[in-house]
Length: 67
Image (cartoon, rainbow, N blue to C red):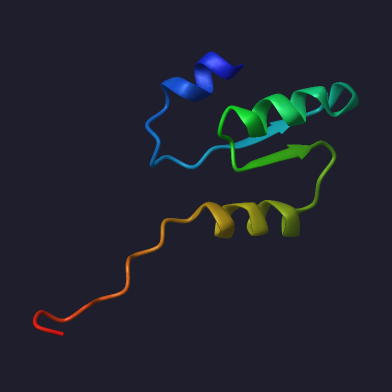
């Protein structure tokens, strides 16, 4: 799993969804490899929406020239 996550460009947000938490070992491995979120099944729609919102790219604040 770590190798696959590391091949994804760093600016890509990855949310891992799995039915196998394996005693939280998979969770720790995924987060250590750079995944910002690991969701275990079953989950509800609000959890998915929260994960998507957290992973959504943010535009940097506009700083006018000569400021």
